[in-house]
Length: 142
Ligand SMILES: [Cu+2]
Image 1 (cartoon, rainbow, N blue to C red):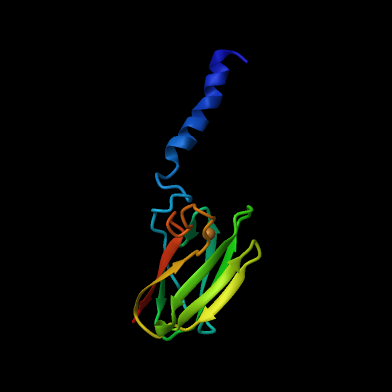
Image 2 (image 1 turned 45 degrees about the horizontal axis):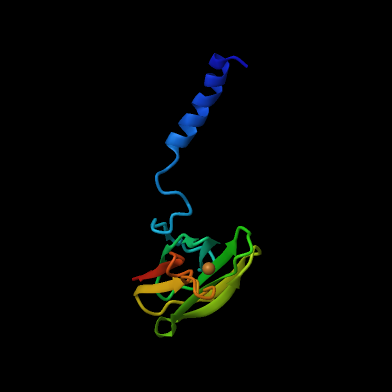
């Protein structure tokens, strides 16, 4: 391959790299907002992907007093994750282990406000997954 041909191959690669969004999927600081729609059967369904170390979406907006079904899975890897909410006062309390097969949790939020959702895993002396960015918020609206 001569140099001119080689250059032609590099141009598309350069464009792809420069066009990719500034915040990639593994940037935990990025806010990934999702507003749940109410399905015809009256359930608000949200699919969540868990990765190192984030939830996508990590800002989930739902309606109060309408059932919610969260489906959570991870893409793979050996790092264990879970998804925890401890807001019983608002009807949201669960702790599920996450695997590559989606798992669902159902609840009905009974209070408006913002409630934390996070991964509670932590390895020995290392930072917790939550501290690394594996957390989000469920925002319950009127
Ligand atoms: Cu985790």
